[in-house]
Image 1 (cartoon, rainbow, N blue to C red):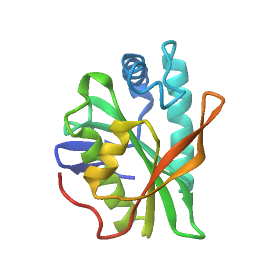
Image 2 (cartoon, rainbow, N blue to C red; image 1 turned 180 degrees about the vertical axis):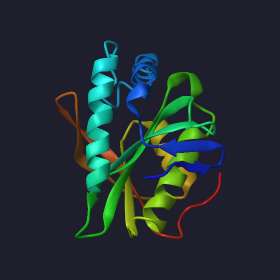
Image 3 (cartoon, rainbow, N blue to C red; image 1 turned 120 degrees about the vertical axis):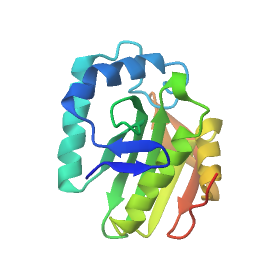
Length: 182
């Protein structure tokens, strides 16, 4: 995947030299990201980040998932992450996920990054359906899905498993042509 420059952002695969900055961004975001994404914890370190970055590279090279970084347009300043993962080639679908470091939240970054990766999913990967699945009470993630113009389909019982417990999740979908501007 080549870097995507879109709407003031650079979306590109993580590099090993991003590990320290990635780990710092994770630790910064424990209060706002941690409740929804269990990998976001106070002890997250560069070694864990390097392992994650390596796993992302393998899955990206195999076409299984596109877990990539969101950077300022300079492609250097890390803002968070965005992904198309859980790709199902039989049904031509995938899942869109996103997170933004706490110090950069509430600036439309997640919406812009999710729009760019979703467009990549439709245009380049030729997927025909993308889902956004957010814990029912995760209002910030749900707001991003709604700003994108995703269709709310349901609250699915026990759809997510977070910190050893099942959670109900709001399920949204996007199909080609659904993406709207903020």
